[in-house]
Length: 111
Image (tube, rainbow, N blue to C red; front, side, top):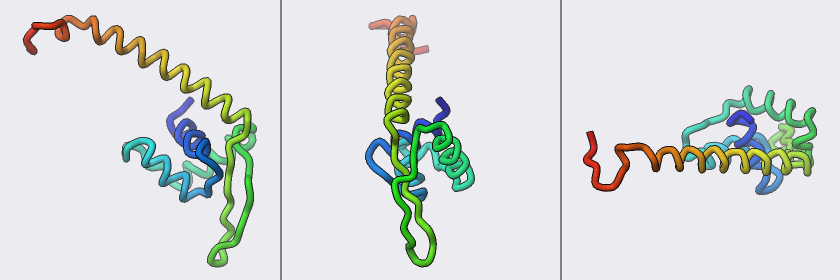
């Protein structure tokens, strides 16, 4: 799963949000490392909606503009849960290998 998809699904796991809310939440989730651009976001939202991972929750007009709220579907929650498990497995493998890295042995001085 690509990072923008992961961030969008993670943002929506907290409840329905509109585009700007998703962008803000994704930036916060990534600790400022990723800022989704509007074009990237809306292309991803269209794709995720057609894949059945998200759905339109509601629409409202704010200051004369349509604001569409999206929500996570059950399939989207399952896909996010699967990705979380995959990330955990990869992180655990990396941690085990790093712990065995010679320079990290106790008492070894850094190079």
